[in-house]
Image (tube, rainbow, N blue to C red):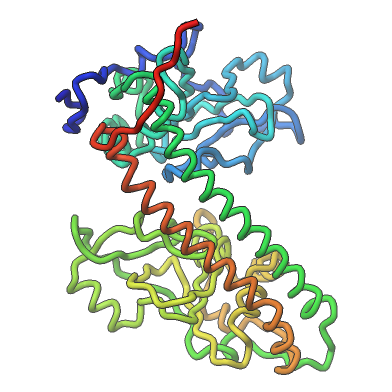
Length: 422
């Protein structure tokens, strides 16, 4: 057996550095020169998008985020010259290390440039398949390796020389493609379920907006959020020490559209966990969880069932008292108009956060009970389908996360056909 970063791999696999598998073209592995902090004068409303850290992810599922771009003109992009295209791999080199993305041929734009905080790797596809390289670099093992290679002091940094020398085990090209196909098929199914949920959410929000915003009556009772909840609070304001094996503690970074990703939660001791459960920092069935800090209200969801997770203060919990149906209250909190209305109860210049004492006083119109009941008859099946999709997503993610290290190490081998030479 060969070994790479302590991981045993089959003897018939090569172990090479990334520099050995880059394409033969000039500047196949390059840092970006574009500094968004000093070049805002070059931004244009449309044009060539600039890839920054917010377009990449620490999550192996999120290959690339097609949003949040700034743009430059095609002429300026030609001058800068740090092009990125389908099958290129992009790293964050400064800031949140471990962020990585893979461009596909069905992205929204034909070409991109990268910012000065990113590194672009263009691969020799006669030697490697880009999806295989991506999954290896996005694996938990390589995330740890990249973090250990940090050479920054105040700001995390990984330089081009370090990236060139990162190691990767290489099975034969047909086996690489077979491994990538297995993992990609799981990710494609996960992506489809996420897209279904987005569509269902949009339907539910449209119905809610029509019934309770556009057709709201002036004589509906005006109440506050505190009037329709038995409890509005946030998670723990203390942060217990992390442990290798323990119980999950979630912050806003662990939230996604319909739940909490327990795999990314840090672990705390049993004693600290139980103390926080006693302090009511555990999320219960029927609670509405919201992202309170950072991109406030970015995530708002109703818990189908209790979670064996305790929360940090960046997540707020609302416990409805029955006056406002929890599903309808969740939809109200998810509206763009609600987000805009809450701007005056947000504080913090660097990290915006909702002020809970003002949040509790936030005014809402309380629809009549009979109208709520009629709406829930239509809305409830949508929520139930999203919850079902979310359970499937979790099952598929667990399967993928279990398979990924086994496939990448050769512990589990996949059958493949040897490519015939023409």
